[in-house]
Image 1: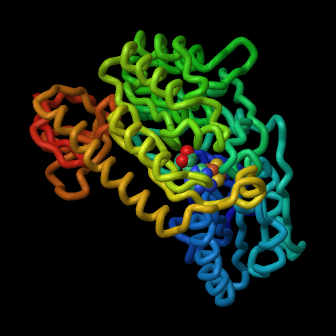
Image 2: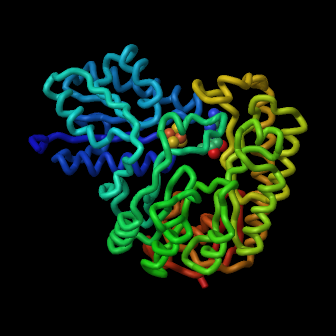
Image 3: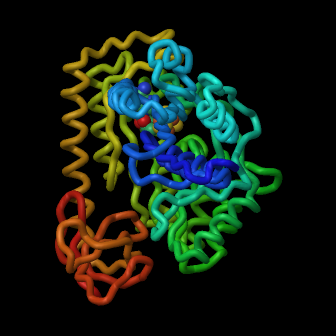
Length: 440
Ligand code: 5AD
Ligand code: SF4
């Protein structure tokens, strides 16, 4: 202890897993007596939880680090730390080039943060721990939710990644795949439900390969969904190569497992998929889409797409557009390929699509997805859905928003609805981003 008056602020970049990691770090630090600060300005400890997935993500963090270093010159007592993927990847460079940074800790080193922070306060020099672990899952730590009045929370079920997609830095920053003890997962989800949460999203880089002793992913989903029919269960992310019929059967048989599957395709060209080391073809992917549709005709499917990967030809790009049309995605995250040092692609495949071609292809992909999202939303007009209310609409204080099982946002009149309520609605209108509804 001895930290009773000290406060900590954590700023989170990157993926949903990083959100949980920040909440886990907050749990570790509050257990040591630290209080939570609302912003970086007055906090005794400021941590940036960082992302390396694309060059742009890292650029933003370098800039933010410069701002915080300037702040630290005015407030020399502040302890500044970099944690997460970029800390793992660039520890040496950060230490060499950014003297304002006191602490560098990778994704498996968060239990050592109280010690590293303590040393920084007592002038013990700069602390670095970027050791990756084969076992660490922070299993018994209940994250301190950064949105305490929330309806929806993330629960990490596994860490790391063994897939080695040729473009991706994650296997290097987060280490080998390992699954968390299912009992701790179910306990955490039950505690969230008892605290008023009505939705959990089970997180892993590749949830379909979850495996802990006799429990596989469908079994884990079944156990979490059995906590209450009022608890919605979502999950992300699924790798197309391992999305099994058993998973689809479990979903179809369990109404509170949401009808939404995020199934990143990355490309519609088998040739590009091969170079990406995705280990499926376009045909395999489309067969899995058919399997989803057979099991759950009302399921929404979303994706991630990369434009301009090494060697991508105009024909490959056209194949991506045609795949998008064929699947009719409800939603997509779309990116330009960003070469990451140390990956197989960076070592063996030239980043040979010119930036202006990447930009043009990405724009086409985004324009098509807007069209597909609008089509998908139009089809919902007139239909009825149950939504879980999350909060007040950003546009209008007398409206609330919630989500359908398919993960679409619906805006409805407030009535006397409160966050966490379920209500049946009929869709009356839509844009490409949201649905408007009336209560029925
Ligand atoms: N360049 C561009 N996008 C990438 N992604 C992962 N690595 C890269 C990269 N080097 C995208 C993939 C992945 C999502 C999380 O980020 O689409 O699914
Ligand atoms: Fe970014 Fe990937 Fe690390 Fe998440 S796992 S923080 S997306 S690099």
